[in-house]
Every structure is written in C-alpha cells, then in structure tokens.
Image (cartoon, rainbow, N blue to C red; front, top):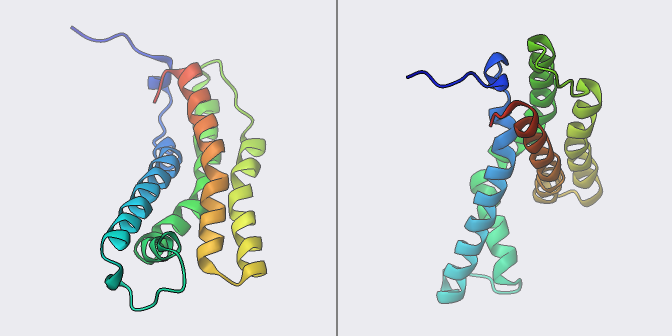
Length: 152
C-alpha cells in the first residue's frame, strides 16, 4: 500500500536538514556542557587551574571539540534557509515563504557572531552568540515548514 503524497514531498530540497541541525546541535552542546560540568564537579583535580567555575571550563572544553562545526552551521544557516525557500517556491505547494527576508533573519546569527567576536575578542563568545541567535529562527522556520508542508 502506498502512502498518500504530502505537499512537502513535491519540494525537492534537503536544505532543511541544515536548518534542523542548528537546534539539534545546540541541544547536544548543552548536554555536553552539563556532562563536562558534572565530571569536573566530581573530580576537580581534572583541571590544573581552579580560578573559574566548572561551567566556564565546561563551555571552553566543549567548544574546543565542537567550535568549528558550530561555526560552519552558523555560516551555512542563512544560505540553507534561502535555498530551501527557493525550492519551496519552485514546487508551488501553496506556501510562499519570503526567501530574502528569511535569509536576512538567518543572517542575524552570523552578524551577531562577528560583532560579538570583534567586541570581546573571543571566538567562544562569537560562536555561542551566533548559535544562540540562530536557534529560535530555525525552530520557527521548521514549525512553519511542517505546518504548511507536513515535512519535517
């Protein structure tokens, strides 16, 4: 038995995977920070310096491991939003998200990351700022996409 075709099946785009990766990676990072903080609290001698809190060290350690993938997501995010909305327009499913406006909103995370990095001279602050500002729009976009196309 074949399932009925959803309106989202007509949209030939996998760019929304990149958009969905933003909140997924953010939650993964939060879990990582919590886990590393817990490990430091259990065994404080893991750190040779103790001037900062365990959470600050956990954030630093987790960004060493995941900073580059986070930065890539922040850069790809506005492009993915634009490409996905363009694919939706080509498929003509009845929902026409504003490509340019959505891409500009997606670009806010990248701009905030650049400004945050310049002002604080910290790559960690830049990456965290960009990711945190990208998550709400990614969730909004995915919800709208689901409501209008039933995918994801």
